[in-house]
Length: 285
Image (cartoon, rainbow, N blue to C red; front, side):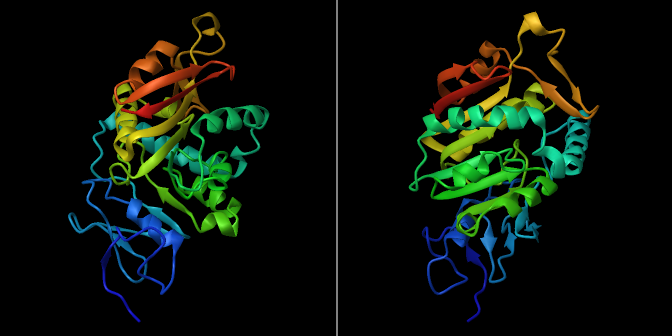
């Protein structure tokens, strides 16, 4: 039986492509056009398009490509973003072998996830998922997970890590943190780890925080981490710079990160226990 275009907002656990429950296709209900926030439409071939602007979003090896066209970036922001995406693609295959991440992850992952108290009733949005350090353990706990990153190669690496059971409830999307392809209020929980510091301007960082707030329902839980700036260590850990000559970074003071998050969230705690990052937990206002 064939189907024409359908609105993606069908009940959880059902979909237009099968006669029975389809948890993955139910996740299409999370998606919105990154340019105008219109709910997307899905056809019988699982092609996603925007009925408002007419854009068609390709599916590449199971990953939906939904980068914005009309992002509010100036020329420098656009150039830095494109350069970082290219570098992330180039480094994706070796990212998981970085010594610092392997050393920190056994402490960082539980410290980040434990206060979120994620269970199978929850819808989770992860922004800046990369190759999936957090995605894989979150997928084991949640009901639905939308994982977003702007590096297609990183998402390909992540896709290969997902078990069959996880793949049925995880949707991988190439998108941008400042124009998320996600419906307003869809998520019960949001997660963004060491992504915010790589956005190359204060305006982009503020828009990314606003987007996290838009996509979370009121009262929804947030975990977010970013590089920590310690003035006494500025000779070793400068406030701003570029890794590999390409990847911009900005280190936050605790008060700076708190002010930024408080525009949309009630910040419950910011921890400095993880040595070089600040870890914030809170809830949507």
